[in-house]
Length: 305
Image 1 (cartoon, rainbow, N blue to C red):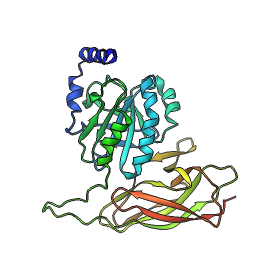
Image 2 (tube, helix red, strand yellow):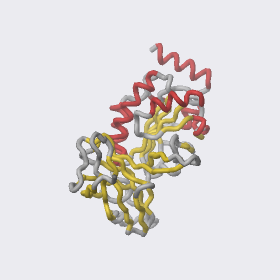
Image 3 (spheres, rainbow, N blue to C red):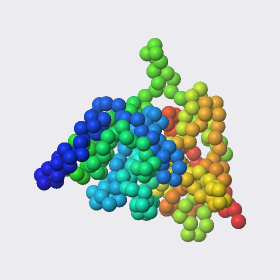
Image 4 (cartoon, rainbow, N blue to C red):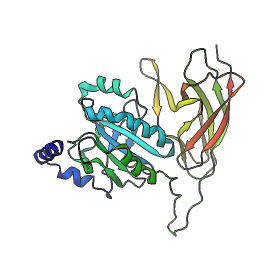
């Protein structure tokens, strides 16, 4: 009760009415632009078609730190089925090293508030604050409705997420006739590299061909031999230093193809539970934004000396 009264007083001092009105459940999410740490951008428009959990937090906030592992659980369970989670860090720029040290343990993207345009949300005075948005950009849950300052319990978030993450609806024409679901993405030339002794990560390359009339996107993957399969892109900065950036969507144009190859995009098999041995295969399931999941047994080639 004391905690709730504290936040009521804070709300009255800071003027929370614009925030509550902006994130009213059943209303469209306000416009936002998030320039993600490590590269990439998310906007309200780009997230159309995805279920999105916007999470406001700060590194100094104890309940925020306690909630992060629960968000990671949700991300690992539901991301391949269409859930995006992004953490919006309300720290100041000088706290960036602390935030980076914390976020390196998690796989969902994040952004520092100075790199985020969320003015239309109003004043963010309560953290942690989770806002669940459906595929049409409508607010379905927000932690302003929580009873205390610890946000929405994981069970409540799951209850909100589950009904939203079924396969996204096929587009409907103006005549009201449901469009044909996109054809299956074709996988060509899959290849995994054998791992060295003690190596805990593997890499997969392949080509994705889209025979359909509309673009699709690779949104995730999983494998029984790996705890996490992440889409990465190898980049080179102005100092000729090579590093990898985590990607969240890889667009495959209509009647086009994209190739995951050394020096570019690739799938990283993280925390392998067994070595990848040349001559064997590794099982991989690919998840797409619109098309059906695709299973592929990837041949393992010898480790390049």
